[in-house]
Image (cartoon, rainbow, N blue to C red; front, top):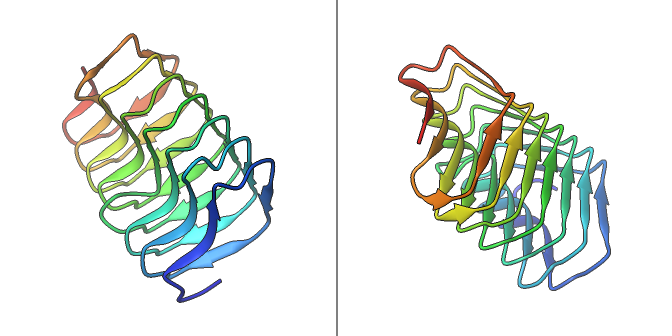
Amino acid sequence: VTGADIGIHLNNVDFSTVKSDSAHSCGRYGIYLTSGADTNTVIDNVVIGNSNVNLFVSNSDFNTVENNYVKSAGVNGNIRLFSSKKNTVRKNTGLSGGDYGLWLDSANDNTVDTNTFNSNGQYGIFFNSGSDNIVYGNTCSSNSQIGVFSSSGSRNIIRQNVITSNSQDGIRL
């Protein structure tokens, strides 16, 4: 899908798979799960150059986002989870993603493992008001400010990540 407002949109859709697709240069989002789009799998996609967020999970739970290549998103980054819980974000590559490689925004009980978030405008991984997230085995390198930044939240676990060559801090809590 190229040039749409939203490339692929799952609105209150459950138990579906988005696999081996592409979404490029869309007005807002490349792939968008919203309004209770629960228990879906987004796997093996290429999502590049969308104006707001490349891959956005909003108010949706129990999804798996795996092995996607996301690059050159707008200001809100490559992958964003907003007000979503119990999702798994695994084995994705997010490069040059506006401000964020991955933004966990009011997101709780998510697992983020074995991803690469490099060369983003501010942060590799950014937490905002989330709790009980587990972040491990990720690589966050050469981001313009911080590798992993938790601005607020509680009981988040950050362990066994490779964090190098970020211009300010590796991890800021």
